[in-house]
Length: 119
Image (cartoon, rainbow, N blue to C red; front, side, top):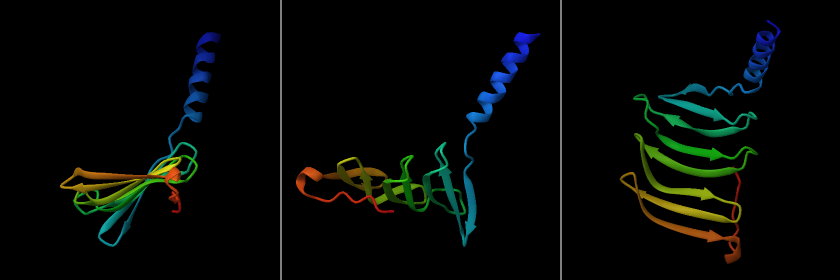
């Protein structure tokens, strides 16, 4: 009986500590703004859905410390145009055409280009 109580107590405490931070959804005009979180509460991704429930408009992704790591645009669920991906010492610009990568350009701090993390 004691073993069962210990197992239940361990499972219960582990469940409390491992709870996910639930995403939030809020209506803004004809769109729904979705915000997804890291376990520490920082924003992981944020963007919009259209009335059909497809990704639409600007989407941004952040690391667990709140630094922006990606930004791009969707049109009815399809990646379009320029997307930017920030790394520790580089910035990649990815151009999408019809939801496929058309070309990639990467700059690094070694090239004397500032890699900007501003939100």
